Image (cartoon, rainbow, N blue to C red; front, side):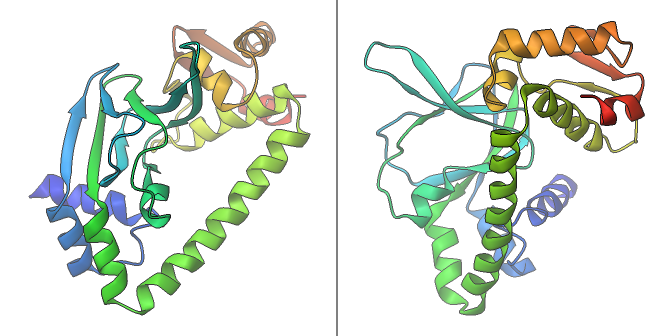
Length: 227
C-alpha cells in the first residue's frame, strides 16, 4: 500500500496524470501492471497491437526500429518518470510503430489505453486540462529542439550533465549515467566518439571525474560556463 502511494505521487508529477483526481488515478492504477524487466527484455515489438502505454519508474527503455538490412535505429531513450507509446492511444493507432526494449534493469507501469481514454471521455474538463499541459510540454520540446539545432555538441553534453546533476535529490555532485555512452550520444544527436572526446576534455581540465558510468562534478561553476 505504501509503495502504491509512492508511485501514485510519482505518476502525479507527469503531465498526463496531473489533471486526474485521486479517484481517477486510482482507477487507472488498478487497471495497470507494475513490471520489473531486465536488460534486453522487450516490452513490445513493432506491429503488435497497441493496447497499452508505459511510465518508467526507474531504469531506461530504448525505442527503436530495424532497418531492412537488419540494423537497429534508436529513436529515443526513455528515462525515469517519462511515458512512451501514449501517442498510439491519442492518435488511435492500432499497432505499435516501433519496438521498446530495456537497456538495463527497469521498472515500468503498463497502463491501459482503454481505461485512460474512458477517464478522458467521462470528465469534460479533463481533456482541456490535458491539452493545456500538452501545450506547455510542446513549448518545452520546441525549445529543446532549438537548443539541439543551434548549440554545438559541447553545449549539449554540458547541458545533459547539468540536467543529471539537477535530478539528484540530495544536491550532491555524483551521479551515474542512466545508459551506455552510445545511447547518451544518440539521445544528444552526436557521435559516440564526439561524446567521449568532450568527456575526456572535461576530465583533463579537472571539471569532472569519471569511473565507468559514475560521474563526479568537481567544479560546477566551471561546468556551467564551459564552452
